[in-house]
Length: 121
Image (cartoon, rainbow, N blue to C red; front, side):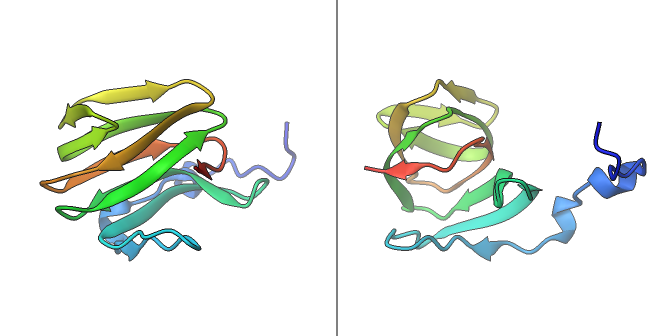
């Protein structure tokens, strides 16, 4: 067990409603219309592993691979993962090395858990 781990539960709470949406910026990728709120940042691997993404109507994220899989929960709106339409309340688990793109016509908010950085294809 990590001796430096806080025992104060407040240290592990993210009040997402108090956070501002920030534009998602990734080198070489068109992320126009996509915004992020980080819920959990892993210092050991230096990246966010749990986050919310808000897609404006018409926004998309290119075809990519998930080396360690992912989990996605649609909190609002409708979205396509490849050609499969997901709606508010839908949950998606993709196994390791699963590949897909993401796009929305209407706009959406999705909770993501992504254990390892994605690879754009």
